[in-house]
Image (cartoon, rainbow, N blue to C red; front, side, top):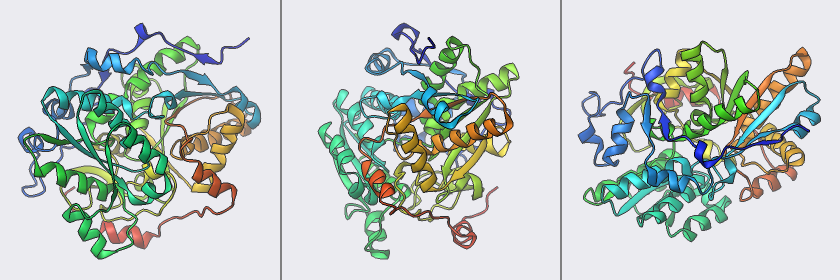
Amino acid sequence: METKKICLSERQMPTQWYNIVADMPNKPLPPLNPATKEPVTKEQMSAIFAEELIDQEMSTERFIDIPEEVQEIYKIWRPTPLVRATALEKALDTPARIYFKNESVSPAGSHKPNTAVPQAYYNHKQGIKHLTTETGAGQWGASIAFAAKHFGIDLRVFMVKVSYNQKPYRRLMTNTWGAECVASPSTLTESGRAALKRDPDCSGSLGLAISEAVEVALRSPEDTRYCLGSVLNHVLLHQTVIGQEAVAQMEMADAEPDMVIGCFGGGSNFAGISFPFLRRNFVEGKKIRAIAVEPESCPKLTRGAFQYDFGDVAGYTPLIPMYTLGHNFQPSDIHAGGLRYHGAGAIVSQLLKDGLIEAQSIPQNETLAAGILFARTEGIIPAPESTHAIAATIREALRAREEGRAKTILFNLSGNGVIDLYAYEQYLAGALKDYSPSDAEISKTLSQLEKLI
């Protein structure tokens, strides 16, 4: 009988994070100070981030040790299972072998604690008492609340208003772990008040919530720092525990992926699953495809421009070299709230620019249909974000059937959808609309950027 789940022991957990920058043919361009247009310094970033996180952000070391305190907390849910999606394969009548890495088993129900725990740890180690952050669908907000509580740090989360209203139970998870959760835009910050003045009914965006969180952190540099759940190099670094485990598990399954797939918002879960496999491409000459899957309604990788842009709406962050739709782009109110972000991280953007990874965009209804098929075959109700990876996997599996070729596909199940059932209710009622921004909409926000590349 074939093994369904491939599990590692705690002794086989990664003890180091993998930094892909060390192996990239072209390193990512540096972030710039918006005022001087010079590369930002550690000193300039230290008012926002913990110092050891800045060191990791700028590091070119291939491997960085995972502190023992972090490894101990990781053991609550890591290593995570690798699962063969045999029932999905049967339903698709495909010769493809489909595997998924199940990151939904963490306390918060997603991959986000992989970086939340080290970020809270390094801030605690520095003596920081208060943290601020943003969250889209609430997966990150809940995860950093879980991690901050472990280290006795206060936390305020600015949650994008559309998700704050759509996903009250994710907000309540955040509260249960002891954090304050505020709908963004709020009246607590200048950037929030400005957004509400422009549009009193503003549903918010990740970029705007970042502005609010950074603004609050900058008010109290002596004991407060900001944490980010995606996009930045150190966040992607922490997520590579996913792919490192998956490399070992795929070897145990005697399977080599032809392609590795992850949904894409800012890049953290896609990077986590794909970067250790990309290392095999760089070092061993493998030809494993890495596919980032974004919403058709927020298509920065597939229709954006490679430019320096702010990571937030108000312009508090450094300028990041990224594929972007422009920081003023307002995404439509899709249910995959964690993917409603205007830009991509610098590392992923450079990899895409160099043709080392691929990008696809998929409409909302196709992704939810894929999520329902997955739930009805494999039993797990996936988060709306994760359904993008499942939809792309189904496309590739059906292509394998048409071509009569036995491909091996690995995707990252980045989170479960137990608290996202409203999205499924809307889909089953036929109430979800697909939305694709016009070229004019994208050109408008891109034209507002200063061309620095």
